[in-house]
Image (tube, helix red, strand yellow):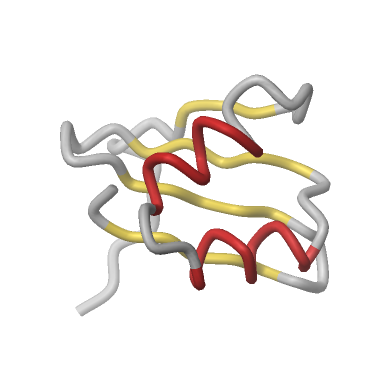
Length: 69
């Protein structure tokens, strides 16, 4: 993973992978975000608790993603 963001108000977890692909996972509880951030291996935590856990998700189109400077 390259970066992780979380909006607790709407429970959206956004992950940018090393490949550059960005995905948003919806209705992710705060304890899973905290677990991911505190994990020794972010990749292992993602694989065990998020990847196939049934969360709705979508890939963010980089052409539509907001840019910050």
